[in-house]
Length: 111
Image (tube, rainbow, N blue to C red; front, side, top):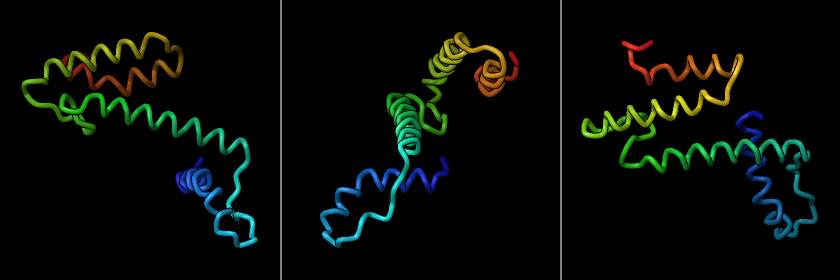
């Protein structure tokens, strides 16, 4: 789903009942199929999980990856372990893509 469409779905979900309260006699002009609503729900759930993950690291590692020198070794170990756990259930192309995209955790000397 394209970002603009995704925004409209969210708007539609929260505002369609508000539209009816306007009592214009005109049906809400924004409508989405059941498939589009399901896709939006799935995508927003994944986004919320990601946001919660980074919020849980607040004060330890920032969303841009910054951590204090005092936390560096613990943060590095945390992401190495997270990478290893993430690799376990994967196979084929998905494994290759995740392995390549998370290799930064290992540092230059272990690539």
